[in-house]
Length: 284
Image 1: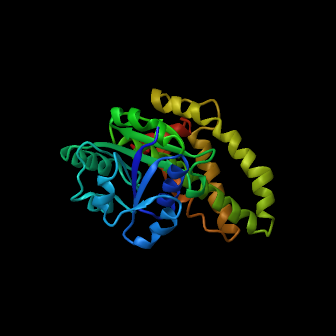
Image 2: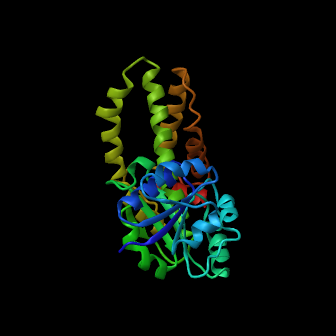
Image 3: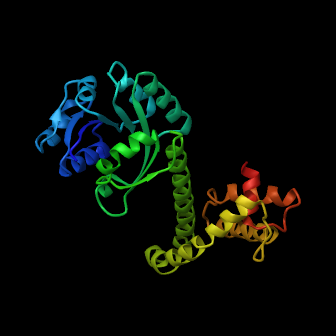
């Protein structure tokens, strides 16, 4: 079913969202602070709006994708939200999503928050995922319209859940990148080929290690951190050795040091026999 959809914010991601919705046959109105960014989309059939309020008035589903939540709220200020669904795909924090949801509800609208787990080039293609939370009625109403953008995953009524999961997934990604950078720097210190190491050794190893994470998750949920593999005392020695090796190779171990400090602290508290999952108690 074709929907009237407004897209506010035409950066790389907002433009990708609008283009995909147009290609899916929806009636799309677009707005951006810099009006010229709308021109390529109007050439493809979108309707350009002179103001954000005009764009909102044209649509039943209003998608906001801007720099931050403050900008999102400023854009929606003064617009008639009554009877409309606001889908905020702006990256932010759970508390911001909950506050924005309350503001939209006070003005008579339904609210959905979303976390885009994709780069703009992936929108509309395989592998793209968007996390949603907020009004269940609004999600049910627009799920089919949103499916062309990415696989939709609804997490629950609390609008803060989508940004919570988004930030958690980004945390895992940054941790992985940190590990890669340290490993690459170590290999490069001996002028060895980093790409070959990454493709033939590191990536298969990380895939194998990732398969253990569901088991670690069970340990976190149960609070039972007993292990049949290397305990924290063994890991304490191993990570200390890593840091020394990095220094000897002339490579800064900066991205490893927080993990070393965490392990050292947990062992000092008398938990050296636990597995790595026990470190979560130092983060809580």
